[in-house]
Amino acid sequence: MTHTSVSSAARQFYLRDRVHYCETSDGVVFLDLRRGKYIGLGGTELQSIAPYLNASTDPGEASKNIESSLDYLVAQDLLTTDPSQGRDGAPPCRDVPVVAAADLFEHMAPKISIGQALRFLTACARAAFKLRFRSLGNAVATVRRRKLRRSNHGRRVPSEGELLELVSIFVKLRPLVFSDYCKCLFDSLALTEFLAANDVYADWTLGVKTQPFSAHSWVQMTGIVLNDTPERVSAFSPILIV
Image 1 (cartoon, rainbow, N blue to C red):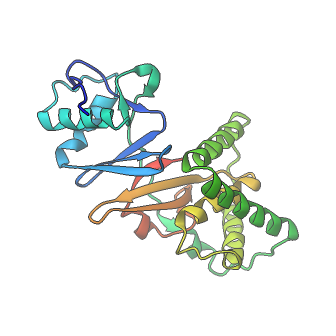
Image 2 (cartoon, rainbow, N blue to C red; image 1 turned 60 degrees about the horizontal axis):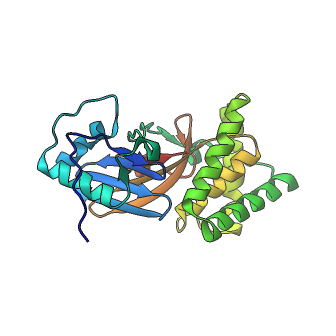
């Protein structure tokens, strides 16, 4: 099958609503939430793709390499030239955490109530259901809607002590259900669900790195990475922050 070439100099490109992307040291990576797949394109020249996804900028005439890549992304249904079918796109703004929650609650001995234990089990069940029977896109949409609803009523910012106590409860209960090192996506979604059940709304983050390619997920809030370390997550470029 052949695809009609779209002139990047004549038309603006838009990200499909379900698609997110980020720039890496050697190209760009796209995440298609509907398919649950990452698509990477190599070449440092492609790091200048952002102006073609922003209607307020005039990137000028594209090089043949960028034009060919944009045509390919349209053919893959990651980009569109129809503004009603897409949106302006920009990589997530990176907020690099400076400290790990585990270093701050190392000596805490949280008291775990029956209510918190039930919230933990419910959070794990919800995360497992969404990832197994729904899709990553559905999970992202649910978390995003809930966070937006709460912000419309005034988002509550917990104290550092409250945040650390909740995370320490989650970490203490976690070995009873799963291993944190094997399932970063599940761990992060379950933690996000548990915090939301306590009226705390952190940033669920997905990131990627290349050479070799690897995807990772973590949760952070107010400069604290809640289920990982700053050293590890700094190696990944955020592609989606919910």
